[in-house]
Image (cartoon, rainbow over all chains, first blue to last red; front, side, top):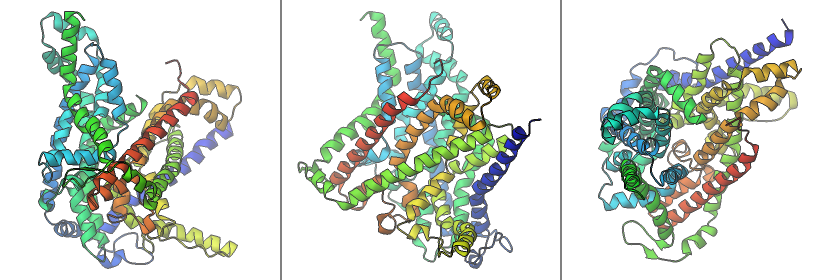
Length: 277
Length: 305
C-alpha cells in the first residue's frame, strides 16, 4: 500500500470528526440549555449538562407562549392547505408545460423561470395592498390562497419529472379517447408520486418555517403561527429565560426533524436533484 | 393556425391558467404597481398621491439606505464565498470512501432544516457575550494567543457590537449551509472515476486533481448554487430581524435592504418609499444575477451536454 494514499483518509477523518462535532454542538447546546434550571443557564463557565434535567421546562415554556396548541393548530392548518394547494396546482401547471405541445409554451416557461428571481420582499408592498383591498388582512387567506396558484420552483421540478415519462403513454390514452384531464389525473399523477412527495415535503417545510408572511398578514394573536408565537415570547419577557426559549425552539424544530427522518431518502434525493437540474 | 393547433393552445393555456393568474397577481401587478407607488406618497390607508421622483431623491440622500445597501452587499460578498468554499470542501471530504458517510451527510444537512425562528433564537444564545457557547469555545485560544504575544484580545459581544454583529450573522449562516453540501456531493458522485484514475497514473497530486478535474466538472452545479445563493442572500430578512429582537442591530449593523423595506412599509406605513427601496433591491438582484451569468457562462464547463 502506498503510504501517502492511506494518510489522506486519516487526515480527512480527523477534519470530518471535528467539523461534525462543531455542527452538532449548537443542537446539543439547545437541548442541554432547555433542560437546565434558570440559574444554571447563567453559570460561568457554562455547564455542559444540567445537574438534573428539568423536563417541566417544556410544559412551562408552552405555558409562557400562551395558547401554544392554538398556534400549533394554525401552523399545521396552514401547512396542510399549502401542501395540498401547491402539489395539485403545480402538477396541473407542470403538465401543461411538459405533456402538451402548444405555441408559446417555451416562452411562457422562460417567464416562469424568470419569476424565481423576484423575491418576496420586492413585491410584498403591492401584494399587501391587494390583500387589504380584498379585506383579507388579519385572516389566513393571504397565507394559503396563493399556494393554489402554483409555485414557479415546484412547477419546474415537476416538469422535469413529467418530461421523463414516455410520451407513448399519453398517445395511447388519447387514441382510446381519454380526455386530457383524465390522462393527467389517472396516468401521470400516479406515476409522479415520488416527485409529488418531494414537492409536498419542501412545501411543508417552507410554510412551517415562514416568518415574514405571517408577520405582515396576521393581526390578532389567536391567529399566530408557532413562529410568531415564539417571537412574541422572545420579545415580551425581560431577563431572557433562555431555558424556556431553547425548549420552545426545540419544540418548533421537532416536527421538521421527525418528518425529515421519516422521509430521509426522498428528501435527500429531492435536494440533490433540484441542485443538479 | 390550424384547428388542431388552436385546440392545443386552448388546452395548454387551460392547464397553466393557475400559474398565469398567480403570475399576474403576485409578480406582474406588484412590479408595475411598485413603479407607480415609488413615485407617490402612499400609506395604504389612503389613495396614492403623485410626487414625481421625490422618493428617489430622498433615497439618494438617506444615509440609512446607503447603510442598508452596504450591509446587504458586504453580507453577500463575504457569506457566499465562505459558505460555497465550506460546502464544496465538506462535499469533497465526504466523497471519499469513509465509514459513516451517510451519517456525516445527515449531520451537515440537519442545521439547514432548522426554522428561521428557532435558528435565530438559538444563535442569539450561542453568540451571547459572556455566556454564549461560541465565546466559551474561542476564549481558550484567545488566552493562548494573549499569553504568547502579550496582546489583550477579548471575545467579542457579537450581537451587541457593531463591528461583530455581521460576523455573527455570517457564522449563523455557515452553520445552515448543509443543503449545498448535499447538492455538491451528488454532483461529485456523477464525476466519472476514470478521470481521477487517469490523472493519478499521470502522477498528479490531490490538489492538482481537485483544481483540474473536480472544480471544472462541478462548475455547472457551483454556478447554479451561487446564483441561487445571491438571490437568497440579497433578500435576507428573518434571521437578522429575529437575532436583533425585531430590530436592526447596534448602529444598524444588521440592517439589510429587505429589513429597511419592511420598516418603511409596516413600521412607518411609508409604502411609497418602501416601493422605491424594493425596486432598488430588484435592480440589484437582476444586476448581480446578470453579472454572474455573464461571467459564469465563460467559466462553466458543460461536459458533453
